[in-house]
Image 1 (tube, rainbow, N blue to C red):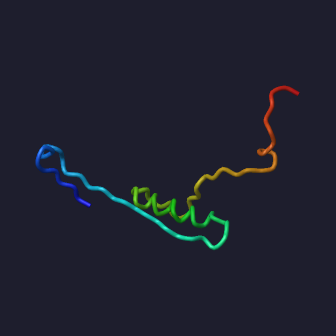
Image 2: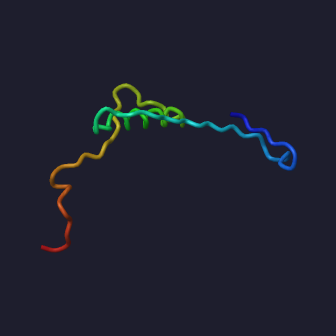
Image 3: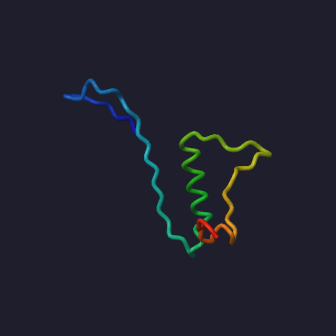
Length: 74
């Protein structure tokens, strides 16, 4: 949408707005695929280039050890 000012706001610069909406009803509680697709869409809209062939994204992996409570001392 192109927004052009007039009247009292005539001195304001023209602006362009983009609105992305999504509505869906997942069939189960496994939302990972949905969230990855949404994140990919937002990255594409923001101009983030896709990773080149042979390049992998760094991800944070959790193990059982990382879920343990961290304490100080013995």
